[in-house]
Length: 185
Image (tube, rainbow, N blue to C red; front, side, top):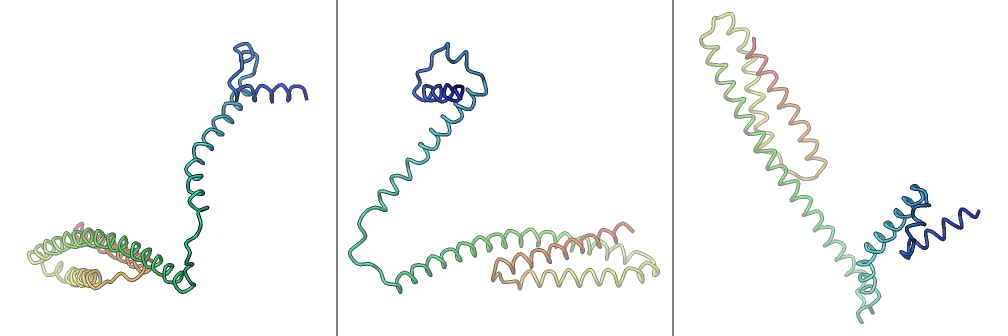
């Protein structure tokens, strides 16, 4: 118990900044570490709490003479919700535009691959033409469908955008793998 009292008095002295060198030498390192951590935590709390005190003073001011009615509060809440919705919509639209650019660029590269494959197919024999004619037609059809779905998509909600992006990315990657598979064979 006396050790605890000594520790408490040492901590108090440390907080007041009046520990002597001799006292510091006799204290164990963990005790000093705990004390300094507690002191720093207290200082950090005090520093971080200061701006909050100014905000509380503003809240303690008298309310305006005319208190808004329930209807006005509802309008304010609706306006705030609309601002949040507009902000989310703007962010999603920005992401959509960026994604659309990248996807269109990828589809253009797939178009070039298709043109190259068609050129090679024209030079190939009848046996190869028969084998890959339908595969290329299918790849071309899928490319057109992807382009149409990208161009006709309208962002309406975050969930809808996430689903579209997931499905479209999967379809686009699948098409890319198929085209590379055709090119390798």
